[in-house]
Amino acid sequence: MQQESKRDGAGTDVAARRRRHLMDPNAPRKAPDPEDLIRLQTVQRRVISVLVFTTVLHLAVGFVVAADHVSADRPDARIALNVIGTIFMIGGIASTLLINGRSWRSPWLLLGLLPGIVGIWWTVL
Image (cartoon, rainbow, N blue to C red):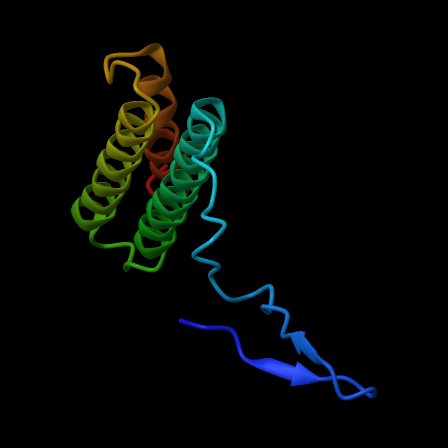
């Protein structure tokens, strides 16, 4: 593709400048640095693991709150909702560990029992 020419005030041709937002075939982009790619992947893993963890945390707390809204004559339903919330929380912690390249078998999984313990205490006892 040829560059268009323009005339300046004196009537001479001046090559038009290429706009910065357009691709310049005469000056291709340089290859990305491998360290930059590793940093980008690390940041992406951290962001997605935080999103997964907070989403599952909200889901587990939602099950505990739902268990609190079940009538008092249905303790089986309250316990079931708390157990479901606990299972989701343990799964969320395990998936966060897997996203970050760690083994899913970790003591951090014990933190997943917290919504169930608090939920049973709050709704049943």
